[in-house]
Amino acid sequence: MKLFSNTITNLENALNYSNMKQKVIAQNIANVDTPNYKAKEVSFKKSLTSALEANKTEAKHMDFTRTNSEFVASKKNDTYSNSGNSVDVDKEMTDLATNQIYYNALIERINGKFNTLENVIRGGK
Image (cartoon, rainbow, N blue to C red; front, side, top):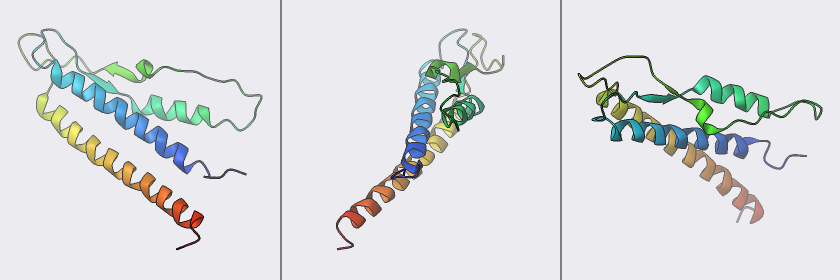
């Protein structure tokens, strides 16, 4: 019997994804003036595939191990400056704000789960 029915594990994985995305966006913004820097992005499809592979249905299935760097890829060969840099600051700032809202929603959801567990442990008092 699973105590949390994978909810907390799934929320943890979503927080890890959001954290990785935050780091990539911050790296892009930090390198906005670096010549020939190619902006990077986190691939949700690769993250989803990895998460699905982690939920094996049988113990005999193979384990797949991946590193976080496999989820980060360079964006298209768009260039936004004469120096060959492909960082669009406005898009990065929008992605940053969107990711922050997503992260905060996940934090609130996991806090709600823990508050519910605390309430059950205390016997509803």
